[in-house]
Amino acid sequence: MDVSLFNAPEEEPRLKVSIPIRLIAVFSCLLPVVGVVVSSKLVLEMFVALSADESAGTAEVTEIMTRASFIAVGPLYLAIVSGLVMIVILVRRIFVRTRTASPPVWFFGAAGVLYLLPTWLYWKAHLLVLEALSPNSSIPSNEMGITGAYIAELLLWSIVAAVIVSISMLVLAFVPFKSRSDTTQMSLIGATAIEVLLIGTAIVVQLR
Image (cartoon, rainbow, N blue to C red; front, side, top):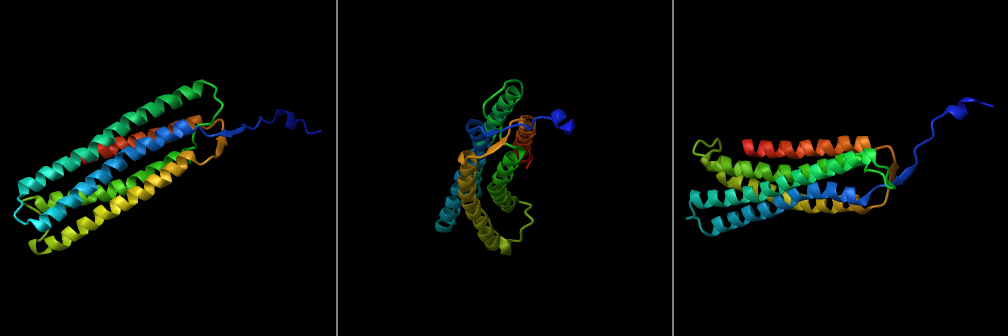
């Protein structure tokens, strides 16, 4: 008889992954996405209003862009707070035995990548609008129409991407799957990576 069999470590059981923790992670990533949708819609409505009333000045456009920026950034800070709550819960689960497993690290990676897509599309459009408004704009005056159409396209795609991302995240939150019971530390790394991503996005937005 092979004595090594008795010394082999017992394989960790596979447990159902905690839905509440998945929901917190998804909530953290969906908050900025919702802000992006509202802001994109607001900027698109501004473009429609401008096409109907070309007498609108830079002050009116700047006011709308400021409001859109506030709407987009506000949920981002709420997401950062939600991410901190998730990290605290995962730290607690390291020391407390539970009947469910923490989400695997790939879950947090998928949530982070999905969140970035509509966010990147919106802020690219936002920065192009600000560049067009700048007195020292690098966009030639004869290309403003093309740039405006490109901005509108980016905003539309940000809304479409946000809808697809929201559905995908909700599926990830509720679809039943299992994971090893010893993955909490890796889950904590994944949650921390998302938190760093959210904070980094907020910093970049403020700097730009």
